[in-house]
Image (cartoon, rainbow, N blue to C red):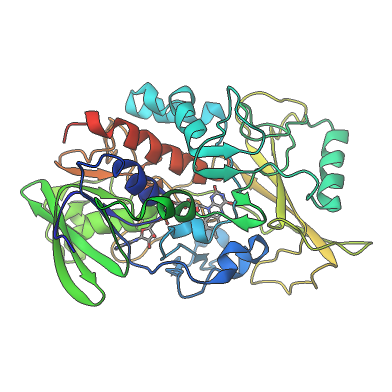
Length: 449
Ligand code: FAD
């Protein structure tokens, strides 16, 4: 294996796989992709109905929050993929870009129209192969299948969508066609009944490129720095300590691990680094701050009068976005989401009714205002699978990366993953994470580092 790369990507998750594939299209760039986990071998990963059972298996980092005062002192499981494909191997496969208005906060934070909805639309179209074909909103030739199911929807979910419309909520039909408020079935990253991970979509077809090296079981401990310039990483590869040099290092380790890697390397809030016994090289108060996530109720579980057939999709088949003060309003960014799950969904506080005997209506806030932080001694947060913001992009104090996703005050170092999202989108964030990576890759050749 090379020990010097032009570009070294840390983390083969959703963003990392996109970057590895896109940047290695240039045969003159030697690209390395390091992943702490192994390639995906569990056959359950591909079966959409199995997704709730994947958390906790040996390819989950298995994070857990500290007890949360805001949730009756409970600690919460915080699954994250430790595997080639990252969290796209565990997630629920719902593909929702967010409301176009959500991205105003991103372009305001950075001063760059690149991160507005209009700026990201080419990437949203480029990444997908939409089942409904190409249009001004959709692409049909991208690596990731985005499938809008119809005949496969559960009769329960059809009844739920009809009931929503009867109460005055607008029919939307497609979450990703330029508006988010209304009723729609979920678009899913499923092809021919099987989950398509980002590794399946982006990486599998390019593994043979001679300028791309993918290394699994490569746990990165920290960055190597020369002054304020990143020169590579110190990692443990298959149990052996190794140093790898790089012209540019790109952190794609996710919203939890990217800020931790920066802090372990001496880049973070000086006081908290000192407390953890890490020498501070660059005082960066924003690293690990601004952590937020969608809070979702486990939901109301209803006993069904008739048997509820097992979902042919991934159980949670429809998300309905709303304005809580006016159900008939169909414009703008929603403040509430309701989800229909064709199965009983309960927290650890309740006994789960038998499958087929009950269903669930989930609810959540789309723009949570509470913020937590990641620190080297343990996160003090509450989450529901969409953590963002811990290396937020922006030009003001508290931001960690600039509009090019380059770390403020450091050279040859970028962060490209969910951590750079300054303010969460209304919906699940996977589509936005891939669009960020696609946009970064498209602009990479013109970046200064
Ligand atoms: P990840 O995909 O998590 O990638 C980070 C990678 O870095 C991992 O492979 C990890 O192993 C690796 N890594 C970390 N530390 C190191 C290290 N020190 N050395 C080497 N490698 C390292 N989003 C949606 O849009 N729709 C959904 O339905 C949905 N459902 C979800 C359900 C669950 C259970 C979960 C866990 C997430 C869900 N999400 C969903 C969220 C979505 O999957 C994530 O936001 C997205 O995958 C994050 O991408 P990322 O590239 O930032 O990080």
